[in-house]
Structures are given as structure tokens and as C-alpha cells.
Image 1 (cartoon, each protein chain N blue to C red):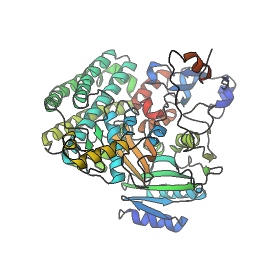
Image 2 (cartoon, chains in turn green, blue):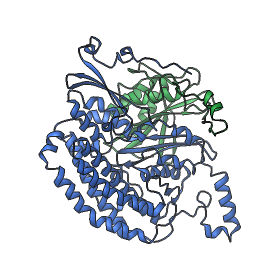
Image 3 (cartoon, each protein chain N blue to C red):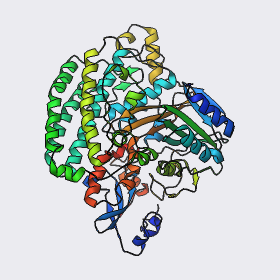
Image 4 (cartoon, rainbow over the protein chains, first blue to last red):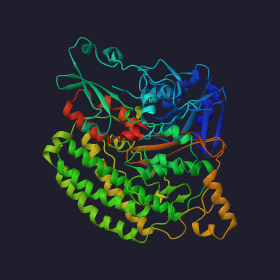
Length: 170
Length: 409
């Protein structure tokens, strides 16, 4: 672990009793969903983590508790440090509070989080889907969402497949 | 099948001003098929006369499920998907992904491969900036810029064809090194380019930098403050034009960037013209790096000899039983990566291109997330265009240098 990061990790640990893991010189800290806004505010204001580099989730299906880890990748420009916060979320009605008030970049990233994983973001100012069409069913990046494919049409079965093929028709 | 619904103002109630609801301001749809949106981007504009009051971007028209597809492939096979992300920066995408895989499985890369990577990625940066320069010139009616820029870009694509057989979807950089050594003609081709290109940049600058018409359209529009940029996660030339000295090549060197001498152009104005100047200067800096890397290009292997992750050369397969087994295992089953997660980032022409790679102990990743810079750079557009004219919006959007493949993934 970077020497400069040690006091920051200690501070987060002390305030939020967060566990941490280290892998290939990267530090990942585990924070509960209800603490994430406070943790990010503290890191931004007191420890100069100005940039929220990435906000996404990892699906651990079939494991159910926690099924998801919501990941907040932080960068400090002033100190040249990186820190990752991981928020465990259960598979049953997954929910995290919004962090748009801390980092504006979270607006679109949280819309993507809902769109792709179905993790509801509480208090989001613009809770719409972002990449998929509004009438999509399901959340594509969940591990139990099938990858899907398109049936290849040949001359002999073109009409037959065309009938059941899901696209807009006249 | 679902019905096609009519779009009403109710959906956008929370995003537009109250005056739009009474019909005092106009809502105008720009795109998704508009030449100045640089791809399939739809902007919903709220206009008061000719002034932009609100801008609501609508993305996702190019969503191809790249991240989902990568989860279903082995680590080697997933790499071809990365080319299709940001199709102006294919080498850079390959590099970002390969570096993430190398970090996850702890794989070393030989020095010659590192230097080749630097040369190719910097050439790609030049090619990408040339497309930006050409198309943004086109948006401001500087038609000839487009032709000149694409002439030089063609030369770079020829170099890529020489090394990889492909002009755009190269997949040349592989985990553990590069696909194969460069052909003998490579050095001469790059030297040719290094010789010609500085004069060409001067030509572009005479046409644009001091051109009063161009300056009138570019200066003092699309102002982006340092604080807004950081809060919106803006990176790359856009952030550097707002006065933040942050370039991952300098600050967290990878692939041996610390050996090369180059400057990071930083300007504090934060307007469209500053972003233009930063990118023009980056063209010269990238060329400097290419030249130094080519002069220093070491001899030696271009792929790691760790046979658990990198396939053996073809010549060995005929004579060595072990090589044959490794080849077979790698191309049928793939290699396994630990059950852990890493994040690694490079400086792409547009900003921080990060890869979050999560292994599950098997040969396929559990999750690959590409932190694409265009996504965050576009999300700030609604802040940047407020209060400017529609004609300025075109210039501001061009100065963000977005690639829709990068945004929608």
C-alpha cells in the first residue's frame, strides 16, 4: 500500500468500521450502502479525492448476499492516489442512495447502473434508462440475463423467421 | 412486441424549464442523424429564440452490449470486442485491455513490445486528433481541413495495415506483448511520417489558429471551469484546457513513458479555443514521443515467454511437445485468472480509459467494465452550452471530441 494512502484508509476504517482488501497494490474498502454518501463526502472534502473515475457494479450471481458490489473508483489528483469503495448490495430489491450531490458525474453513471443492473438509485434526480430503450424488460448486465442472439435467415426459412423476429414492422 | 409510444413533454418535465411547459420556449430535436453530432447522438434542445436554455442528450443508439459479450468470451477472445468501442482509438483500447489482463494475471511484457506499443498508441493518438480536427473544422465550414487531415490519417492507417493487416480493427497488441514483430518496412514508414508531419501541423495552424473567422467562432464559448470539469469526471484534453495538469502518461507512467521526454500542454482558459490549442500541441508532443521511441527501439522478443498465458511461436509447435500442448490449451480453454478485481487506466486521446476487470478463477471474466472517457465528457455538455447560440453548440460539441461507440459501448 502507498504510504500516503495509509492514514486515509485508517480514517475511513475508523469512521465507518470498513474492512479493506489489497490486491496488486490496489486498495478496496467495503462500505455499507447507508454510509456511502458520507464516505464519499469525507474523501472528497478532507482527503482531496476530486475525481470519481468509475461507478459501476459487479454481479456475483448465483451468490445472493451480497449479490452485487457497487464500485466507486476514486482518484486524487492532488496526491496522485487511487482508492476503490465497494458497496455490497443484496439481490432482493437492490438499492443504493444517490451520490449525485457529491459528484455530478454520478448522474449518468447511476442511470447506467439502474439500466444495466436494475439497482435502484434512491433520490436520483433523473431516474430514466440511459442506454436501453425505455420499454426494455430486464437488465442486460445481470448474469442471469441471457446473452441472446439473432436467428440467421436463409432463403428457405426467411418468411418463417421473419414472422417471429422482434423488430418494428409496418 | 411493445407498442410505439408517443413522446410527451411529461417525460422531460423535470429537465426543462417552466417556460417550456407553457410553450414560451421551443423544444427542438437535433439528431440522431445530424452531421454535427459526430455519430448517432440525439440532443433535445430547449431554445429561447436562438439561445440554448437546456440541452438534454439522449444516448444509446449505438449500444451493442460489448461488456456483456466480453463476459461470454475467454480473455484472449474478448479482446476483439475492445476494438469496436472507440473506433478512433483501437490501439489504445487494445492496450488498456491488455494492461488490465496483464495486471490481473501478473504478466511481464518485454521491452521491445513496450516500445512498439508506445509508438503505435501515439500514432493512434495523432490519427484520432486528426479526425477530430478534420470534422470539427468541417462543422465550422473549414471544408479543406477535413481533406488535409484525412490525407495524413491515411498514412497512419497504412502503417497499421503494415503491422497488423488491418487499418482500423487491429487487435495487434495482445496480453503479454504484441501479435508479432513489425515488418522491416515499418521503420521507414514511420520515419517518413515523422519527416512530413511537422510541416503539415504548421499548415493546419496557418489555416486555423490565427484565422479571424475561426477565432470568432471558437473563443469565449463553451466555458468549462476546473471545478465543474472535475465534478463531472471530465478527463483528457478537455480537463487540461481547463487548467488541470493531469496526464496519466506523465503522472502514472505505463509502458515506459517515463523514458521519453515530452510536455503536457495545459491551458487555463477552458473555452473551445483552448481545447483546440491543447489538442494541436498534443499532436506535436505525440510526434516527439514516436520519434524518441523509434530511435530507442530495443531488439529482442515481442512476446512474453510465459507459456501459461502467451501462445508459443509457430516454429516451436512443430518440434516441441510442450509447445503444442500449451498452444492447444490456450486456444481451446484459455488461461485462468484469479478471483479478484483490478482497475487499470491509460490516457486515451479523449481522457482516462479505464478497465475494471473482475476474474472468477476461470478462463472467462466475471465482469469487464470499460470506463470510457467520452461518456463522462459528454455528460457535461448540458452545463457547457447553456446560454450560447445553437451555432455555438455545434462548435462546443465538436470540441468535446466524442465518439459514440465509446459512449454507448
